[in-house]
Amino acid sequence: MPIPLSEQLRPKNFHDLFGQEHLLDKEGWIQKSIQLQKPLSILLFGPPGCGKTTFAKIYAKAFDGNFISLSSIFHGAQDLKKIIFDAKNSPVFGNYTILFVDEIHRFNKTQQDIFLPFIEEGTIILIGATTENPSFAINNALLSRMRVLELKTLNPEHLVKIIDRYEKEVKSISLSDEVKKFLVHLAQGDARHLLNLLENLELLKERPISLEMAQKFLQKRAPLYDKGDEQHYNLISALHKVYIGSQGC
Image 1 (cartoon, helix red, strand yellow):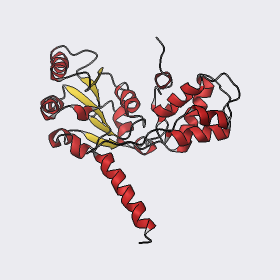
Image 2 (cartoon, rainbow, N blue to C red):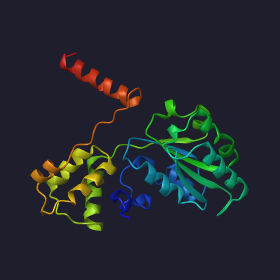
Image 3 (cartoon, one colour):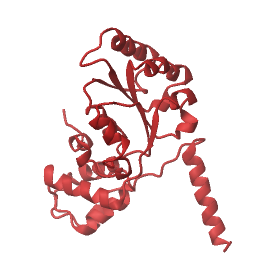
């Protein structure tokens, strides 16, 4: 089965993770918790393609616990209860289970409440990832038991490093600096979208790949928009600022 490029190049440690330097200072509590082997429940909040899942997996696998990963899209309350029951009654690899829940904001209030007593007593260490503002999407009781970490959109320098790593470790497709700059512009800080663009360029037989070829072959990433959610109001705010600026106010 073909493995997506985003999975092939997924970093295995924090040293290979580009971006999020503000969270990975040697004297910061993430690194300290790993050094002391004291895992903490965390909530990773940030835009798509910034590295939330990668960050979660690297952090979780730094500890001697039983790591379980699930998605709120495919799993429900019964799955959670079974995982927690097994963690409580049949602990393996230690006395705790590290549970990673992607898209945790899709769990409703009742489902989120299931975690509370088990985080409190230490049966599970919960790592959640969300693209939604935690203040709106996550129960206050659950938020109070987790450390919220905001991950930032990757900057152009980070994205260029990802392209260079791809050409070094996967396949050199002869990209000029101007083509790399164009790819970075299209990706808009989203590493996953950047890797999808690179996979698209692999389909071209011509080498080297010119800027004109890339421009004809690739599409710009669609803007983030969720009707009624935070991106809706972010776009409205941006529109207001542009309008006010155009009036010379």
